[in-house]
Amino acid sequence: MTAQPTLLFSPISIRGMTFRNRVVIAPMATYAATDGQVGDWHLVHLGGMARGGPGLVFMEATAISPEGRITYGDTGIWNDAHVPGMKRITDYLRTTGARSGIQLAHGGRKASMQRPWHGNGPMGRADFDRGETTWDIIGPTNEPAGEGWLTPQALSLADLDRLRGAYRAAARRALAAGFDVLEVHGAHGYLLHSFLSPLSNKRGDEYGGAARENRMRFPLEIAEIARAEWPADRPLFFRISAVDGVNVGWGVEDSVALALELKARGVDVVDCSTGGMILPRDAQLVSRTPGFQVPFAEAVHKAGVMSMAVGLIRDPAHAEAILCEGRADLVAIAREALYNPHWPAQAAQALGADPDWSLWPEAYGWWLKRRDRQQAAVKVA
Image (cartoon, rainbow, N blue to C red; front, side, top):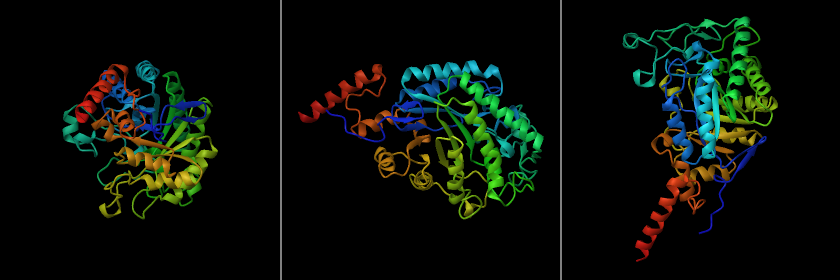
């Protein structure tokens, strides 16, 4: 059989790096680290995703400082001791043919919270009984993320400078750990998103308030730092919440403006997610339909900035159509990859892009190819 041409399974080059296809495993927090350290779980989890055939696999949101952890289980890169465990993972991912990425994160005023399966909110008595206690958190102002949440310390200019240093050091460690792609997390209500959104950033200085350029200032500074530390031949991504919600706060026109400023500072791909602010139910963007976030990636792409689409993309034909219709440059899958780590390889089969099973590990593909032929023969008979 002859392979059918597809965009999803064609290589793409960004800066000096080529990816074997345009399927990305999105950053997905598993909250399984201890003191920020990755372990066997992370190696097997991410290695299994990489064996499934994507072009790029992201490490989950990784804290640049201990107080920047969302939960006690976050991976971290605030210490040189975190590097060897990360490098063990990137060394393995390289053997699969997949590129590796890491997402630098700081929880901001949503740090020091429960793991999702413990409640996904502020820590309480049950968490304390498990031996977990809260820590001091920070934000653009001292306004908490929501009712009952911890009150953050408002960041001073000196604090912002310390954060710049933490991001700079984290980027250097990510490079030492062997990652191919660096992504800055600017979404989901965490630190950088809380600077961007008018719902959370009510500062009265040059880093906040009504003026969008002020609210973008600190996130753009972090993007500049990341680009300066990251090699010129390696891609830099930036994840955004393209909208806060339905007709509230940060909107898609703001995201387009931000994307253009990010591109001017050397960001290559804008990763388009949504939400993260604690809003009334009628203001929340509800994830009811496949590809519900694709229009935001499309807006960024049509503004001349490379974008990555994510959000309930499960069907291979849908993923291919997103690219063919010029709505994004990359397609990321997340929970679908948890359900089926071999989704990329199976999608290639479904689209006719890999009739020889070459995207599968040889130890799998050799057998599966023969099983496929046997089944075809039975059908003919």
